[in-house]
Image (cartoon, rainbow, N blue to C red; front, side, top):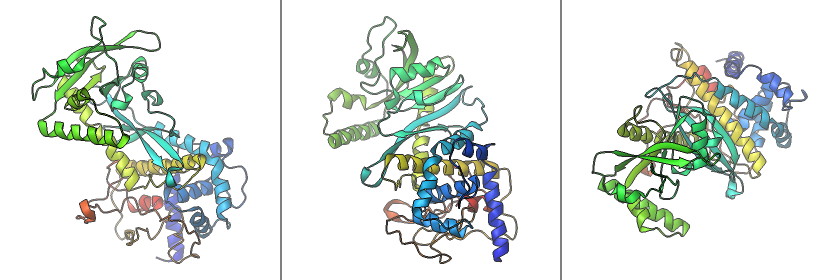
Length: 442
């Protein structure tokens, strides 16, 4: 491919990526003062390219400056790159919310729209900075539909997520708090949340505190059971009614669950009570969904699908390297992760758009796979790779590898052995997009 045609292809790929952004994104860059003057970085589009080079493609500040120079911008130092990135936080948040707002609402799963919510902590070098990612996954499509970034001091709560009537939230035991559950119910949504030994105080019909172990011991080995339960809304003291659905775990699973409890207690130096160990042999959840809408066995089936959010975190951290937080200050760490989440949502949007088209047109060559060091050979939409010989080598001494193509990884088994290649998938499990969109985001 001649240099002219390659440049035209890169420009086309970049324009396809810009078309995925919410309308008015350039005007918002001026309004939110992310872009104030056209000096060296001449437009909001160039500024966005710098953001995606640094956070999305994983370039260090020095490599970002070199790649920006190769992309046709004016020469920048790494300090100048950081000064350009520093005020972009509100703009990135606006674009993230805009991409999340373009979701088609449709009830699914017994008339509900099931969403899995969870949180994870991303740590910086030597754990000097930590950012907590609060994440919501649309279960029917395996797509992110809400996310919030906070520091590590902000706890996980259902109140952080935007909910409305028709939603069904699936959450782990850390979300079993009366305030968050009541807030979801007041907005007209329903919830299925796992219970812990002391996570949520529930009461029976007479208002007496419920004891769980005597009832759990009466369960048979393979049949789920349910029981009425309620708790008080901390805001107004009213009762929030629901039920507890429980199942006795098979003996092998119960033993493994009890071993995990013991290991977790040893790591924290805590003591495990006998009642806690016995309760680990059961799966029991609280739900506000009426029994006429979901039977107990269906409630437990829905909760088992909660594991999909853990797989989503694994894809974000392994394929997009969202866990390699290179920044040390809390402000820069939050900014870096905002750029990474915008990058992930653009990948998700490109896959949704590409699913309506055929694969690569005839005669187009596929991009080369990453080399042994895990480096992509080109980042066409974002700019040149500053380590491929087309620009001077970086003098940045830090351990900052380039981001490999997130859609070109091979799967690895236990012990590092390489398994047979599988069809390329993205962070949401969808088939890979066609070549143009893929190289624009790589």
